[in-house]
Length: 445
Image: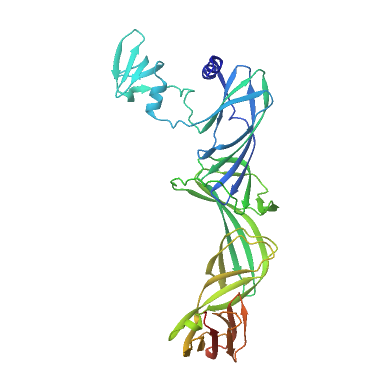
């Protein structure tokens, strides 16, 4: 290293610094699905020609320092960047005060002395030259030295030749902050009202005040995922607003922007309403997925799943959990819940809510014929409806659609969802319906 470079580095440690953290002009936060967020901040700098260091306080403790994108005003040259965070401890305070004056508490009085060292006990020198040891708990500190940076901070070593009052802009990624989408569907028999909430879980070691907040729904590719940290207990709060988020399609994702500025504390969950759709057409379906008849043995009883199918919506839905509620008199009942993937607009949504108590399907093998070149089976299907209302039940029977495959039945069927022979049967209240189907297929050579 050249002598001039060594001199420059020495000057950085001995000349003045500027603290930019008190003049935040503007901030925004974009939260991603992958436990990450992008922070944007704009602050005012006041620099003089002898300023060699900028301490940028109050960055998130989970900052990814490699992601920092800072724009200095013209006339400022960045030399190096450091991340510093000195968690305040007695040991660090003692070390920072070595060679400096402190107060020392004695039995009946307090004196001023210079701290010489601090190991198991503190060694101090009084103003009249006496040297003695004392317990470290007897040392009284009047200030926190500027050499200790007690908030997560970026430290920039800079060069500037002018007095500068201008704006600094910075973007950086943080981890341990995430959002989830949660939905409530109030089911009303043939329609439903769908409400969406975005829940922010902030464990980033930073609070955000008066911040523009957005959520990017979609699976963004990150080169590496942040390592999860140990979570502490959190407080929970809800932000109830009549306004919903503004949805903007953006580069293959969907950007939801909250139309008001928010405050998000560290170690806190915040809920924000982002969707409110009324009177969505909804239908209830009963589906049983059965066994391949060519491999069926004996008799098998199967459950019937209840589903609620929503008509294609005018809005896209970020992935999340949908909870379905319905009214029974003046009482609200949870019918079930299901998880949806990222769903584009104009897409039919099917929600599995649980097994129907009163519907059961039985598959019984009647006969099976195994030949050298083919295999065939004859199956009795029985649907029992123990409820007091007629139910339309759909049976999905997995079976090949190749040229050699044949299905024979008096009960009408069609192939759906690929290789499913699909039978739809109306079963009156408190009755049982039966039908027989035969399946045949050539063996694979």
